[in-house]
Image (cartoon, rainbow, N blue to C red; front, side, top):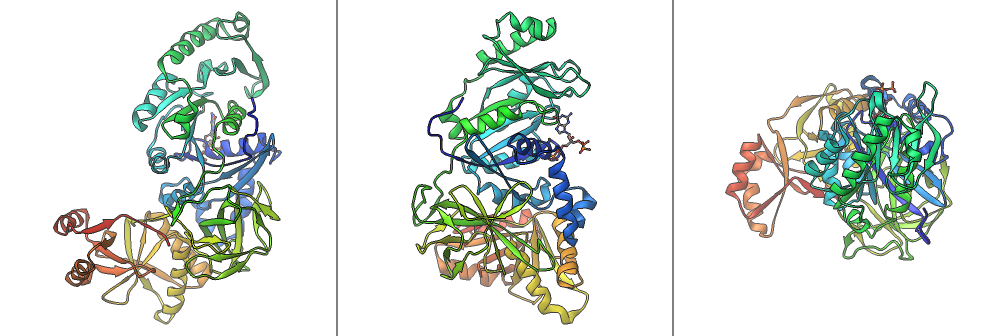
Length: 527
Ligand code: G4P
């Protein structure tokens, strides 16, 4: 079911709670997209990558993925860019920023668990930006909750219309396949012990077609007819405009492990997911059809190769046709950056990019010039907006084992703040830096990276503060006055923006109430 003239890029991410099956689904998408040939390659690739970098030992020890990467595959003339997002909740800041670089998302839900906390958090970020979402209810080959219950939960918990696009014939022990409601096709498991889908799908004339009776058990077909008919009456039909607006989610049932529903998901992305959308910017938004190149950096990863101390900035191209060797201006500093060795990320290899188009992600190796939030253009002073810093939930003072290493420590912390994995605050009083992170695990990563990459032994001391807010005011005088009154709780971030550190949520509330003319923000747009 192809659409004439459909534009040829789909840039998307998968959002899910850990363990719902994101890695398995990623692998299967790449497999069916022809980018990898054997099941298991995504994990294998991850392991070689991990072996390369010391600090990633933490990933291995804790069995989680800290880094995110970009994977590309092509099918029927469409290029799919899948931006992988770290799933662990401690790293949600990085994940949130990745979501600013996509045009749509796939939400994976475990059929036995329904909506879990991390799914909900990530969904909220998508909603803020009206990112359209396709839902994949995974693991129907195992005992799960009834399909109706899951659909109702998605609708209620996320305040979203749901449109079932397929229906499971039984679940777990009684699983007999998936029925595609839009195309009237039944997908059945292989008869061997694997139970995997092997391409045996049969087109029928509708749920009433008597052909169905011979294809699954009598109970299975009776239940399918009853449930699917009820579902079609009880839920909204698929409405493309409502989906694109982020008000409705089409729901596919499947099993990433057993290959069910994966190709339908790719077809859905091809048919419905938006091609690159205009990006919000100041002083104007940028349309992907514009001839000049413009993009923004949503992630920086340092020391991917510890021998070279390289850094790769991940830029999302928003407009124009990018060609290797182009010079782009870093808006803000005006610095010209010649991009001689851009990298496009394919499933297994990094390849030198000759050209790239809106929606593509380009890796730009650099020595620390590029920062998260940077806009690059052919000269026009536009700044893409909406890449927030998040208020840290844990504040710590940094303690050096060897005080002569102060300079190395500052450089290291600045580097890591540039990567956007944590924030450094300079208190108005005293010289001890305070760092802010959104999760405990980041502290471990920091210590480990300080040692491995910068040879700095450091630890953390509790800070008297619990949380921080960026403060702004229309009335400069009121702001100065506030800062004067609260000198010991004031700091600035690396852009010199004033930050108020509060001892706890109660104090923050109290102070906010007392100074209604000031804005206390939990996020700050990066410049
Ligand atoms: P994540 O990236 O979202 O954290 O999830 P991941 O794909 O690693 O999957 C988590 C576990 O769920 C894995 O099992 C995986 O094999 C299993 N799984 C994923 N999709 C399906 C599915 O459709 N059906 C069934 N039955 N299981 C599924 P594990 O035992 O934790 O890991 P592994 O030893 O299999 O790698």
